[in-house]
Image (cartoon, rainbow, N blue to C red; front, side, top):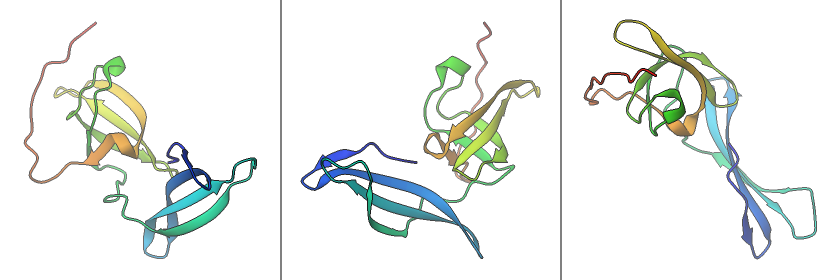
Amino acid sequence: MVRDGRATLYGRKYIVDGWLAAPIGRVGIRTVWIVPEGFLVPELVTAFPHSLGKMIRNLDTVVLTRDLPEHGLRSGDMGAVVHDYAEGAYEVEFVTGGGTTLAVLTLERDVLRLMAPSDLLHVREVERA
């Protein structure tokens, strides 16, 4: 995920978070880039391992961290990961208690978190259009 560039004394700075394949599985990495004023090509400043949170994998239960009103979903709604894309995005299915699929969405890591053992489950009725 690329964070918007901020103007600095040395040029526009970009922070890029991503995943690398390693013998132990995927590991988080953060890189920092500068595009000097008047140049188009970025220069690598640094790269280092970075904790991007616990890994989300196929079939994990995840929780939305923000509302998605265009899909009738609210922060706190739970879904199941049905596909893990290498780029840090996930295909997540949201279903009702009766098993009806409400949405299958491709979502970035920043709008999801793993369900924690201490999370309290909550029930709400889905508003039908």
